Amino acid sequence: MADHTEALVAVRRFLSPSCRVVQMSGGALIADFRRARFLGMTTADVQKFVDGSAEERAELAIALVRSGCAPAHRKEYADAEIRLWLRGVRLLIRTVGFGRVLRFLSLAAPDYVRAEAPGTEDVARLKRAVQSLAHTSWFVNDDCKAEAVTAFVLLRRSGLQAVLHVGMREHPFALHAWTSAAGLCIPDADPRGHAFAPILSIDRGGR
Image (cartoon, rainbow, N blue to C red; front, top):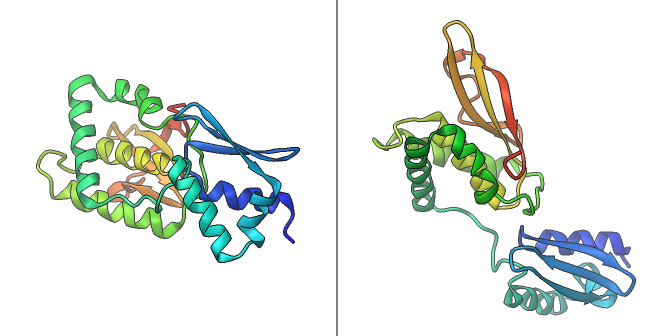
């Protein structure tokens, strides 16, 4: 039988990014920060996530999905959604300025959202989509700021770790923005071979 910690990890991975699970004496407590509510699980139910049969795990999964504590499937953003985010972020940057947009990150990617290590394939797919859509959009027009903010928000809203960087180079003077995750950068951290020294890094909740 798997220990309680291993079972809690299995539950945690299944939950929505806005939910946390903590060990209790009689099982576990799930805190849903988005809906401001709590759900309890018995020790037996927690263990079923590791040691239970496929039918038992499916029954628990369905219950968590129906309660809103778990997604029906892992969120993968379609190209149409990424395009809308790119255009929306670009419009916001043009309207209120890049500095104010950075302050709004805590609203788009709240601090209570979990931050798990992303897979390289997931980040690579997002990078291809973001850069392809940005390069073919006259509105976004290959804007590093829109690409970086969009990538950061989408990764964080999926419960994945990401860091948004703003860098500077002196000669000639220029600013650049990129988001790093799983060893990849969206967009590239050194476009056209020019290195930028980070002067600001934001990881969770716009901090």
